[in-house]
Image (cartoon, rainbow, N blue to C red; front, side):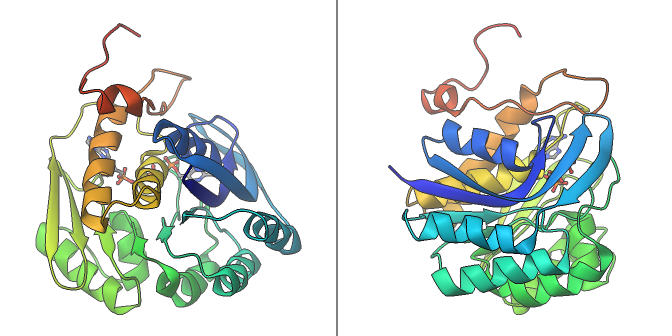
Length: 271
Ligand SMILES: Nc1ncnc2c1ncn2[C@@H]1O[C@H](COP(=O)(O)OP(=O)(O)OP(=O)(O)O)[C@@H](O)[C@H]1O
Ligand SMILES: Cc1ncc(COP(=O)(O)O)c(N)n1
């Protein structure tokens, strides 16, 4: 069985972070493993507290996995502190996993800073060059580059500039632009455009986590980068279409890949 490891924060409400990642791995038929970098107290309405895990414990978790199990792909999510980034960087530089999907999580949908401001440069310097693919949304790409991104042309330039910083592939997610959702994949040579009509829902908690884990799952299963991203885009679109009205705020998406794989593009019963 193929394996995928998420290095990320825990979301107590299960819509984002480690929990979304593990659900996504399972839905793809990939064996999921986790290294927890921080515990968040959060729900669909907000983040109410964060406790960072001691860096030595992060190192130990990574060591425990790599010393025992072959890891087909790694996904990195929330890594709030400089020390967290350092321990992830040192461990991954040592174990050298072939596939690293970096979701540069910065601010939650509810506005909480999940990456401390002083950590941004560390993420750029240490984690970006490890990435087989990095998946910033528009505000994250703006922070990485210090520029404004307002149009698809701006997204293309951003992808080129982030590629120059060391990530082998760049996927700029357009969910935050007005109008339909266009994501742009850049491999250092060619742009691939992934277009999707905007789905009218408020329930998009954890969409970025889910998309990056779906990419990591597809890469673990041996897909090319382009196919991994295209398939992941179908997965997140169906997951958003069938997102769940849970809680009082921004609800989570729905994970049911097997139905999609069996040729069904809509859920066969009411939820
Ligand atoms: N309303 C929507 N309709 C269709 N696709 C969407 C919608 N919102 C987001 N997406 C898609 O979902 C994926 C995740 O993008 P998004 O920009 O929401 O990531 P994010 O902000 O990093 O998510 P997160 O909430 O986990 O931080 C992208 O493929 C984006 O185009
Ligand atoms: C632990 C953790 N990781 C990532 C996110 C981003 O997800 P969102 O932007 O949907 O809040 C989150 N809220 N919590």
